[in-house]
Image 1 (cartoon, rainbow, N blue to C red):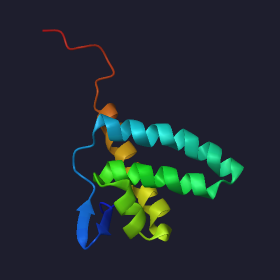
Image 2 (image 1 turned 135 degrees about the vertical axis):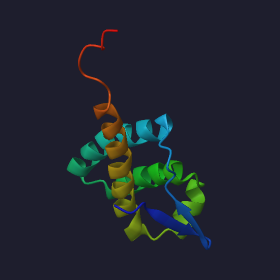
Image 3 (image 1 turned 120 degrees about the horizontal axis):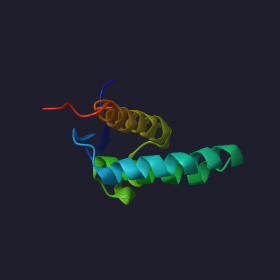
Amino acid sequence: MDKPTITLEGQAYKLPEKITMSLYRQITNNNAILNEIISGNSNADMVEICADDLAVAFGVDKELLAKELDIADILPTRRDVAEIVLGKVTSKFNQIPNGEAAKE
């Protein structure tokens, strides 16, 4: 999957290579909230949370993002960001040895 990119005021922003703990927390915490919102049909809340996540992911001001990013792009871009963040973290977790440490 290509890394998501957003363009605000003519400047392109790409999701950084390094996935920070704060971004991981933001995405995982909001996944649970989004699941609740989806069942309650509160689209405005869902868009706000997704915009918050994108502002953190791309390191941009939320007001600039709200002013410049097409609302139709917010949810799919957040979904792509979440897939990348969670996929990267999961792949790192899978590299952790699961058995006993080797004896010298």
